[in-house]
Amino acid sequence: MSFQGGFRMNNLLMEVENEIAVVTINRPKSLNALNSETLAELDQCFSEISRRKDIRVVILTGSGEKSFVAGADISEMVNATPAEGRQMGLLAKEAFLKLETMPQVTIAAVNGYALGGGCEISMACDIRVAAENARFAQPETGLGILPGFGGTQRLSRLVGKGRAKELIFTCDQIDAEEAYRIGLANKVVPQAELIDYCKKMAAKIMSKGSYAISLAKEAINTGMDTDLSSGLTLEADLFGLAFSTEDKKEGMTAFLEKRKADLKDF
Image (cartoon, rainbow, N blue to C red):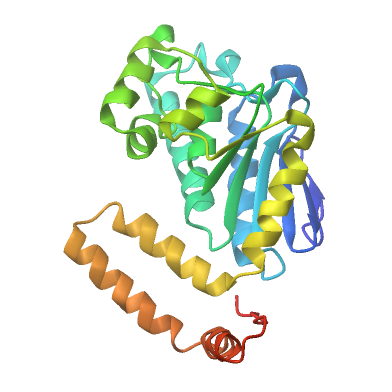
């Protein structure tokens, strides 16, 4: 395993090119289901990425053409004790929070089934691009449990409390177009174009001020969990911080000089 450039773990692959990391959950025989080992590897991977200045955008996807992540690994959970179930939930919590809060922009390239933990890890990404064959669901209550990797918290924040309750209570699967309609997916594209589309989106994002984007991400993420006044104060604080950067000077000077800005801060 080597982190420089990219790496291979038992259940993960990462390739880095042009400051874009493509992280692939690689358990095709189980439709990329998340077991404890995979969650631990994701935690390690996200910790490493968050420290790297040579990665500005992360694309998260699943191996194969059928499944993004088909959920948590039921074969591991079937005989788990309450304490073991809670520990698995906490392991996912830590890994997904690292994904959600890393300074890099994260894009979920949802290339098929995003069920249970798959839907939950996609929601920890900044942006979700769904292939036309993608399917989203939180099927846990049909198994006698509830979403334990963030589904009860992030889904309502994305689509509203009423729709989140409906999806969790009924276990209904929704297709990519419905996910787009309710705000769960940002874009829907043909499966064959999915990764290229995400890389083009990443390049567009990287043409902007990456440090400014990381501050905007912090303002949005933190502001969603606080009152409006506190969120506006945080925004003002981060707005002021952005004025200390070379990118601010370059961006505004380029605008006044009617030329393209060369933004480099991260």
